[in-house]
Image 1 (cartoon, rainbow, N blue to C red):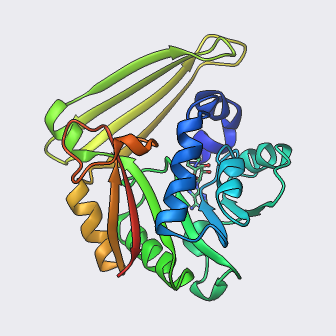
Image 2 (cartoon, rainbow, N blue to C red; image 1 turned 30 degrees about the horizontal axis):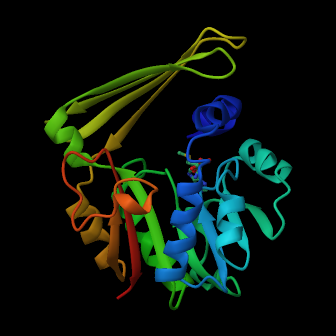
Length: 248
Ligand SMILES: C[S@@+](CC[C@H](N)C(=O)[O-])C[C@H]1O[C@@H](n2cnc3c(N)ncnc32)[C@H](O)[C@@H]1O
C-alpha cells in the first residue's frame, strides 16, 4: 500500500481524476444514504484517499469524516476545502470500537477491494464497523472474484492527463484463487515505476458471508456507482460489486 498511496500519491490522484465525478455518482450516494442510512447524520469514509468522494458524501448527509493512512493523499483531500468535511490520519484497522463517533450513521469504503488485506483482519474490520454504528448502513465495494474465475486475465492501458502511461495487469491464478496484479507507470515527467500486489478472490457469496458473520445483512447490490446498475445478484459478468448493508 505504501508505494501505491504514499510514494506514488500523485500518480494515484491522476488515475482516479475525473472517475465517477458525474451526476450519477452523486445521485447514487444521495439515494443510498436516504434509503438505507440516515441523511440527517454523518458519513464516515474509511480509506478516503484524496477525498474525491468528500463533497458528494458531505452533501448526502449531515457531515463527513474521511480516514486514511496516507498523509500525502490526505493533504490533497484537505486542499478541497469541503465544508462539513473532516479528515483523520489513522489506520482503519486500529480504530477502536469504542471510538463511536458522535452522530455517524453511514460508513462507506469505496474502491478499496476485498482481497488486499488478510481475511481475519477484514472480518474484524467489518465487525468493528458494526459496533461503530448502532443503526445506519455500511457500503463496500470490491472487484468480483467470480469475474476473474470466468474470464481469466485483465490487461488495460491508458494515458493519464500528465502524459504518463498507466498499464494495469491482473492475472488470475486458478490454483491459489488469487489475482497477481501489476501497476506500471511509464513515460511522462516521473521515473518509470512498477508496483506488484496480490489480491485474494472474493465472490459475491463469500463477501456476503463474511459481512453476515460480522453482523451485517446485505440489503442492496450494484455493479457500478449508478442506481440503474442495481441487481438481485451480482453475476460473473460484473467486474465489480457494491454491497449495501444494514445491521442484522
Ligand atoms: C484504492 S484506494 C481508494 C481511495 C478512495 N476511496 C477512492 O475511491 O479514490 C485505497 C485507500 O485506502 C487507504 N488505506 C489502505 N489501507 C489503509 C488502512 N489500514 N487504514 C487507512 N487507510 C488505508 C490508502 O491509503 C488509499 O487511500
